[in-house]
Length: 90
Image 1 (cartoon, rainbow, N blue to C red):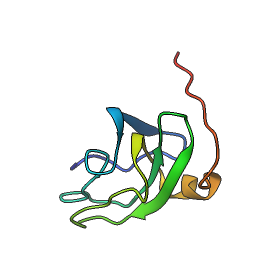
Image 2: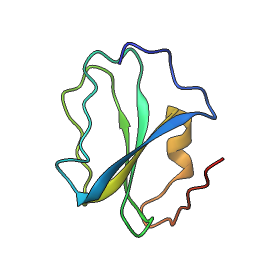
Image 3: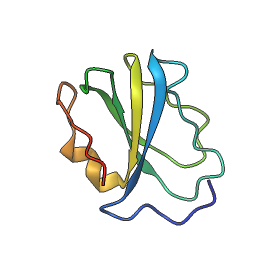
């Protein structure tokens, strides 16, 4: 919230303890820009992709998710429901 826009190649990966719809929800209050929200389950499968608009109250994934990737809006087109992803840490 109240941050600079996400760079095209940047983002944030949020993690929950288990797959859930409610705890994987996000809000966009006090956000100054839109984001791509990509929800990923414990099997590393994309379960939902949405453009989250600034100042909207809540976004919930269509199916339970463990991870929420918040990225630049242009990245939304790179993810489709059913895609498998992997995480690499530097």
